[in-house]
Amino acid sequence: ITEKRNIIGKTCIYLTKKDVACLQEMGMLFACMKDNEFVEKYCHKEIQQFQNCFKYYMDRKFKAKKTVNQGVVQPGNNLNYKQLNKYMRRFPNPVRIQS
Image 1: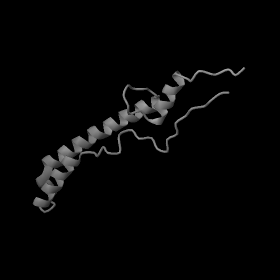
Image 2: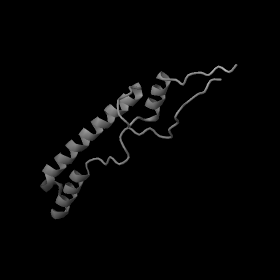
Image 3: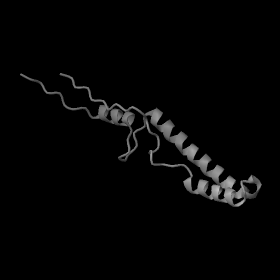
Image 4: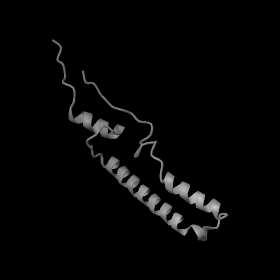
């Protein structure tokens, strides 16, 4: 008897759902825009900070997606279903022989 153990995931989450990109920078940008009647030229610093933050976020997201697609199992408790399946294949359950 062979038991197939697989974890099936509907969606693959590269970063947690709770991870919100650049919320603080976005808030500062909107506050500046509101104070300056939505004229962008007065909020250059805030726009630049938001763009830098978002670029960093997207780079992190791309690296996480690349790691997942390679199937690399990283230590920790935040494994996705593909990584968990790969890990479980490395340590299969012993097969019982019935007599």
